[in-house]
Image 1 (spheres, rainbow over the protein chains, first blue to last red):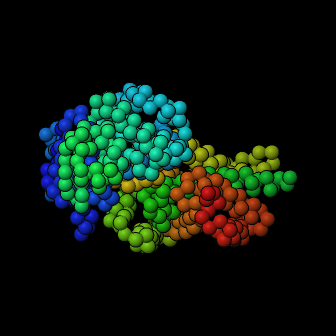
Image 2 (cartoon, each protein chain N blue to C red; image 1 turned 120 degrees about the horizontal axis):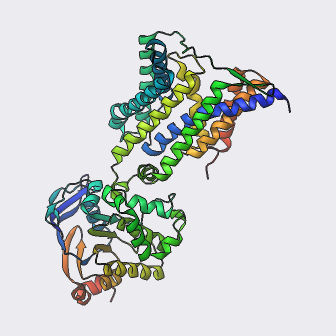
Image 3 (cartoon, rainbow over the protein chains, first blue to last red; image 1 turned 90 degrees about the vertical axis):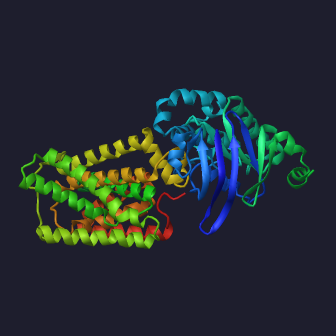
Length: 234
Length: 284
């Protein structure tokens, strides 16, 4: 469904990604794991168009999407839950969700999409008038995911959904991810929390210094001795 | 209470309406685009000339002349953004100030060249109402009413529409609005058009009360900036309230001393307040 072929990108003279190739099939959940500074966030930002791709090709359902700016990527069907949630703190929860449905196609089905999201995350319905910035970290993550779902994406990108959250809340966030998967969504998730992310994805890639070093099914990677030693502390 | 004092207060509230309109426009542009239009009052001057010429020279009925002026100044706002602001969006703030400051001198000089330095009046004499032995200018009453309606319309636009919410979202986190499918450049154009339209509306209301000349912007431009800084730059509600605080100081000061001295009071108040609350009256 989503495929990247030898994608390179960077900031100014600094190159962050070196020929990254990866595939995500329809309905699949794929993880990208790796240490800090490996280029995981850059990868997400390139796919959602915040950072331009320098080389390579990017396709979504056989359509070339490489080089589109971010606001057009959303219309193609890519939604990105950014690192640190990045809600609009002084907008209410429901206003944040409305912004998530900004593109014309999403505006037309705003109410059904809103019902679906509230059904998925009833907590947000209770808090719909509250300013997003006043909620707890876990609730904010819930709202950030819901905001991305409002555009009815084909692929949902999640950048470090568990970052900066208390351990108990981290498990709740991974429960949310499982919940979204159960809805049949295609998910690409970047995480440092290797153990837990491998429990919710089908396959994963290991990104180190801007290049894919390993890939395999979640079970294979869980059994891989290098991953176990370097990333799971086992 | 002294009846003249009450009259001064009422006139202060009425004056605040137009100032609030301009403060809203300036704050909207600053909050969203992060640029200060130093030339804002001179864009209002252009609108006043438009009303003047349409009405007195071309015989356009006044309401229609006002509509044309508002639309025209909204278009001017878009042009200012495209020609002056967009090329310097990524430049240091000082360069942006110089660019819009340059436009201020350009507009003033160009108006002088085209129209001379004559004071021109549209010649509409609206009655002065006498309410319980107090005199209230009808032109000011209209200006206040229309200004308030404009502010309320803007509020609902920002609160209820997709574009309005997008405008508020950009002011809070401009980096990620693209992820919501929002094209920042288009929102900037919308905001510039709204800022222009507010200046155009204010121009129509001011043309009823004041003569237009190339340097009219200098008489209220500094006051508007003072109001915006007092309310906290970019803080629309703060600017709205500050408009009424300053207009009260000006009219009540005028009652105790004279109009000229009242501006001294207003700016003294501003300077002292900046020492106590450097980030504005309503900073958290």
